[in-house]
Structure formats: C-alpha cells, structure tokens
Amino acid sequence: KKGCCKSGVKQTQLSLEQAIADNPTFDLPAEYRTNRADKKIASNPIKAVISGRGSVPSTLKMFNSNDSPALVFTTDQIKSNQYNDLHKVAEIHVVGKSEVDFTRIVEILTKEYDVKQLLIEGGGQVNFAAFKAGIVNEVFLTLSPKIAGGNIQTMVEGTGFDFDSLVELELLNFQTVASEVFLHYRVIKKQILTKDLVLHLSFDKDIGKVAKDLSKFGNHAEFNTIYERGN
Image (cartoon, rainbow, N blue to C red):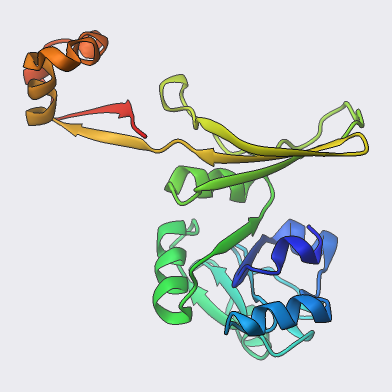
C-alpha cells in the first residue's frame, strides 16, 4: 500500500473503514509523479471512497491533499446535510438505493473519468461486493508472519459464495522480502456456455472429454446456460 504500488494506477478506491483508519493523502513521491507525467496521466491518482450511508468525514486528508479529483460513491440513504457537506470537498455519485452498485461505479469511472486501471483497497465487505460484481481481474495479497487470533476480519466478508461459485485464482508471480511473501494472482473468469455450444461439445469427438465432464449437469438440451471455467 505504499506509493510504489500506486504509481501506475489512475484511480484508487477505498472502503469507508479503510479511509478512516489509514486517512491517506494519496500524495505520491516526486519520482512517481514524474513517471505518471511521462505516461501523460495525472500526477496523483483519482481518490474515491465508498459508503452506503455517505457517513464520510469531510475532514479526511484525501479531500484536501492535492488537485486530483476526490469522489464519494454512496446510495439514496445519504442524508441531505451530509450530502451538502461532502459536496463541498468531493464529487458525489449516488449508485444505488440501499446498496452500492459496483457495476455502475465502473461505468462512471470509465465514461466520466476515463479510468483504465482501478486499485481497490477495501475492507472485507467492499472486496466481496467487487468480486460479486465480477469486476476484479487481479489480486495482490501479502502474507505477513504474524498471528492475531480472535474475531478478526478476513480479506473477503459479505454473505460469501456458494461452493459451486467460488472465486478461483491463478498464481502469476510472487516475491519474498524478509519473511513476508507478496503474491500476485489473476482471477479465473467463468465462461457462459450456451445450449448450442453445449450440444456442439456433446457431439465433437475431439473434445468428448469436456462434454463428459459436463454430464453432471444432466440433459444438456434442457439447459439454456451452463457455467464452466474458461481461460
């Protein structure tokens, strides 16, 4: 979570808990600002915080640290006085009635702010919502040799995924620094197979094994969609 991790990222997104706990400024060191300028992107990343009720302190450092836009994504549950207070220091986007719509967030970032790369430093709830929306492509995970125990938060909270819909990761790279291990994964996307494609698999001798593997779903002709892992 140091500046080196954010140097090439155009937009960074935090959960409310993370923003309050860390209270970051998102001011990058001079060498990283120069690197971003060479790539013709803003010297500092766009800053964003997520809060369903909009209960974000307007005094956070991210709102007053540099000239990069500061965004708040919230829902209809935000109170008018809180909206007016935040509107003085940030651009506010209401993206849901009671829950934040991550798909809508990505649409806004892409179309209105030309964001090409998004770094999410969320708590467990935000991370779960991002995975559930299918917007996560890569995961950077740090293993630290420290044992806490007790009732602590995990990387992903929420209601969790059913066993058949677990998010699968593929290790791309890792690095060991002292006793810490930095892991870089890609998310293995699920591919939707249409009925016509499944029937094609069933009769294609070259990939008969795949069709056999799909037999657990029953009579292929009776299914409109079947989910199977793709590359």
